[in-house]
Amino acid sequence: MAVEDSIAQEQPSKVAQENGKVFLSEPTAVEKSSSYREESDFLSDLKDFEKKALFELKSQLEEAILGNCLLKKEDQPEKNDGNVMKAEKGDEEAQPEDAGEEKATQQCEEKKFEEINNILCLWGVPLLPSKGGEATDVILLKFLRAREFKVNDAFEMLKNTLQWRKDGNIDSVLEEEFGAELGSAAYMNGIDKEGHPVCYNIYGVFADEELYKKTFGTDENRRHFLRWRFQLMEKGIQKLDLRPGGVTSLLQINDLKNSPGPSRKELRIAMKQAVGALQDNYPEYVARNIFINVPFWFYALNALLSPFLTQRSKSKFVVARPAKVTDTLLKYIPAEEVPVQYGGFKGENDFEFSDQDAAVSEISIKAGSTVTIEIPAEEVGSTSIWELMVLNWEVNYKAEFVPFDQGSYTIIVQKSKKMVSQSLEAGPIRNTFINNESGKLVLTIDNTSSKKKRLLYRYKTKKSSSF
Image 1 (cartoon, one colour):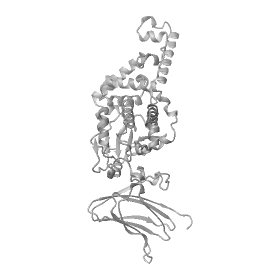
Image 2 (cartoon, rainbow, N blue to C red):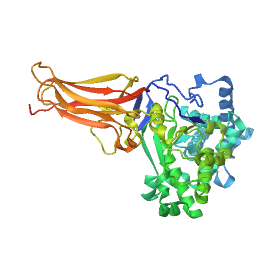
Image 3 (cartoon, helix red, strand yellow):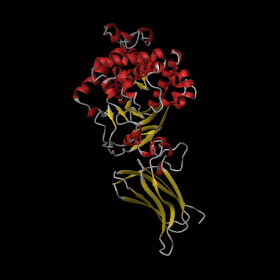
Image 4 (cartoon, rainbow, N blue to C red):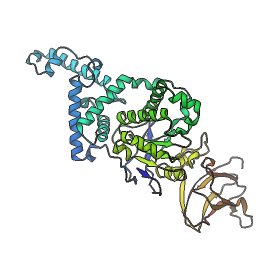
């Protein structure tokens, strides 16, 4: 488990979107946590033993599907009669006597493969290896990695997942309604530096006793909660691009601020059930699990759940105490994608900065030093908008408009004031200025402390047609 006590800078990946799905437009070198490294799904990048395991799993899966023994007998698609099945058994009597019979046999076999493909799909990906493609390999590699490339274990896990989905009718969960109350407990919002869709889990909402009892109070309530959680996972998977080079996993943020503790029996039961079901049936769909605002009791809860987690799952954990929330999230998520309540720049229903000008820049301010940011304001009547934030604050900040005409006076936009630590919910400072003559805005940040500070900022200029 990695505890975030320091900041490691990362270079943002180039991310593109296509048909609502997120993928990396080109391979990029990104610094990763030493505790976990995401592997490539390209066959050419696999090690020899990994390629061998994939080939063996595909052969085993193909045989099980064509032999109608992947699921329980009552759940299997019906076999076709006649020449196809006899030919599979190697019966010499099944050999076609003329070209017409051979064509009929081929059509029958193609129909059978089509039926199997329609029935045996996982997250929209056909599982029959001989009729599948790169996406099939991506899915199978997830199961192999979850079981350390032990083919038999991976095959058993795949079978159990298919049976679990069949028994629980998981494919229909996307169509189910769970009410608005649980909507505040978890939601998808933005992407991280590598393009992973980010899911925020807000456990503090369950501090409300009425919602807590309604969610966890009975076995039926907990089953309802689990199906809602599976639906959220299925929605996240729909945002992925299950092909080599694509983004094939999610980033999970777990906010434990004001969350009920492990002393609540109903919560403990629900968490055990959720952890077990998600780990067993959604392998390798979480790139990293970040726990923020971690209270003292978290470590007791972690010890309780640890026996139910694989070592690989635990290696993806990142834990941040309240004072390290923003630093930790900025390590993995661009500042413009981090919600303001966590110290980022992404405000709800705030459309001032669009995708084109939303990017946030960063400057390191050494102890006892001063930095300035200049914003061009050459066109008269233009509106300059800027936002800035200094992690842990405790700096002096001022803003001035300096005209190009030496005969004009400098205008004080923001008097020098000491910026102290504030609640994360306040978000970055935003200022606006309309210039009546050509010039530039000069933002000055003076770090009088004995520690280095991180300055995050962005700006835009809107032209006016009234001048």
